[in-house]
Image (spheres, rainbow, N blue to C red):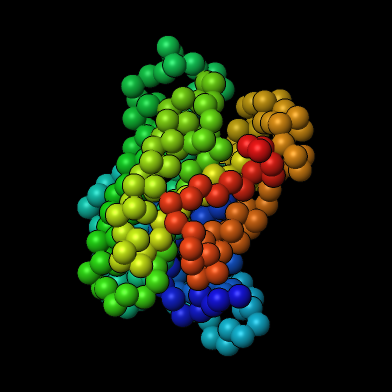
Length: 266
Ligand SMILES: NC(=O)c1ccc[n+]([C@@H]2O[C@H](COP(=O)([O-])OP(=O)(O)OC[C@H]3O[C@@H](n4cnc5c(N)ncnc54)[C@H](O)[C@@H]3O)[C@@H](O)[C@H]2O)c1
């Protein structure tokens, strides 16, 4: 497997779920990490947890971990995160933009009942937040230059490939992430930068665990009746696919939506 050891990767949403699991996996591979989230205490706790990860075979020294609190809805904060990343870690080789939320009325409100506030909350974080992060990352990567291969992975969703009744703001934001990813991939390929997105299905993270409390029947129905493998995934299963997309083993993959959904969309 081509090594990511010693490279610098920025991860958002690192305090929980898929972001934390991805960071843990990358740490074990010897990747220098720049982690962010908008929840300071949870981010601090995640950093401590990530640093206890055992190192993989062939990784002799623990990589560096830099962390900064960022609300991805603020372009100024996002730009500062990426500027500081380059200063602290000496470069930027990859990024996983994984901060995200679901709306409060998921599974309850259809489009006619969707409030301006819910639409803005979900789209500001899930779509505009990814745009701000990817723009800052691409600007930094192009400025550093050097022609080394670089890679960005954004969080879409199976809801970004097919419509989701009573979840329109989230589905629209994730469809937006797909368009943003594919467009950027066409712009930066000649700079040796690849841009892909992952489309997870039902992954066992705090996001889904909260949903389970409110709409367990709906989610279990997707898992039991709408999916080939018939189970929820562990977030590390997503993190390992993200690591594959960040590394050179996926050197000809760009502009792709990689589903990690146990055979939900197939
Ligand atoms: N869990 C799933 O089943 C699933 C399925 C498809 C897509 N996804 C996507 O994967 C990504 C990660 O989801 P997860 O399940 O790990 O969720 P999670 O809730 O466990 O983690 C999301 C993290 O994002 C952070 N965050 C939220 N708003 C933020 C903001 N404004 N600025 C910075 N950070 C912010 C949260 O604090 C949290 O730590 C999201 O984009 C989500 O939409 C998840």
